[in-house]
Image 1: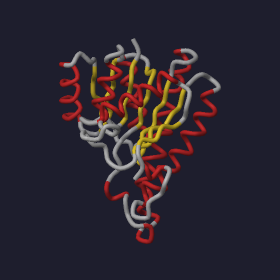
Image 2 (image 1 turned 90 degrees about the horizontal axis):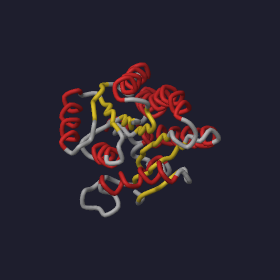
Image 3 (image 1 turned 60 degrees about the horizontal axis):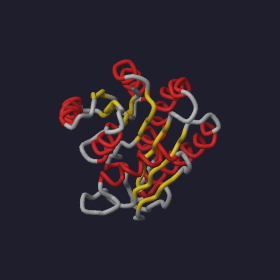
Image 4 (image 1 turned 180 degrees about the vertical axis):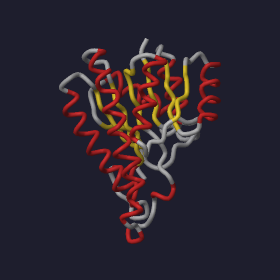
Length: 221
């Protein structure tokens, strides 16, 4: 049995993805900062028949992410799929002329250093699993492809993450490791036919199993 690791797991999209992959036999490593919330989410998933466990990490601390992912592997088994989808902090979203160099530290740590640390931790194991197994999934808001003047931090940092993801897609694709990105314009909504968590989880499952495209964009801002 292999494992899905979700960096930035929560009760919305993270839980839906955990259920979707769990239904296919994946164990699920849930990673975020709050152990209590992780334990509650793992318990809920367990009642639905999904084998899940929570591990704490701060995505702005690369060593923390690497350690959590190592624990996921040791506890649940080799990581076949990594999803990087933490929600950015509100203070990352300042108007462009009010954004200082100090304001960009958090977004860059969050959206660039964090993913790089996660990828370096999981790629050796994905190589061990063999060709056409491993998948790395990035989930971003619409500012990753269309910058917004009022959300400068995420616009710049998400664009950097998108560039990193595309480079990974090109290089790791040669080894049979799929790297893809799901862009979600606007907010996730239970009432939206395409942007509810279950529908988005299905898109991520399609990216993992289809292995034929880099990006899916759902709606636009």
